[in-house]
Image (cartoon, rainbow, N blue to C red; front, side, top):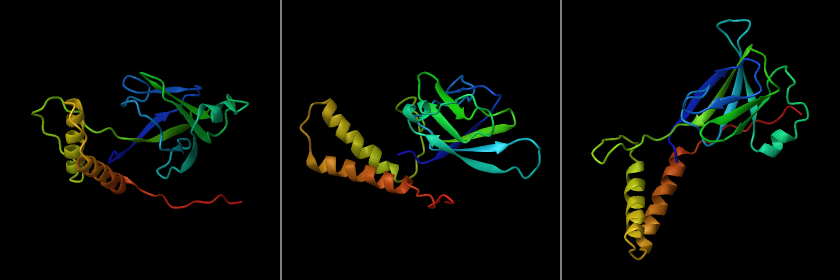
Length: 175
């Protein structure tokens, strides 16, 4: 239900893996997953650098099926292991230092430091915060469930999903 995506990058050094998270090689809040990835060739340095999509391997099993993980030509895919406190990114094949790998991750919503803090959200978040707050408060105080409150909470979350959902253009392989 996050309303923004974030582009983060790492200039590869020939290592098999890179950490991502607060204090990692990619120093951002640790993402739950990678939404998309692309590579940028840095050499030869020119103002017109070409970005090429990379496949995101969704599971450890997909990554484990790769027989030769240390092959080192052009990176074609990336696997993200969401370990904690730092996640681990495995580009494959292992790229030389001539590339920069960009990852699209979901940006985190701001955290509330205290009850008096003002945080600005897009307007479609108002109902979702209110009705889901009411629903959680009823549960916390062991009040019986209210079907109308549950319906409004679910409806407001559906509104958020529709507002934040983007459908990329269909791309078919050349074959």
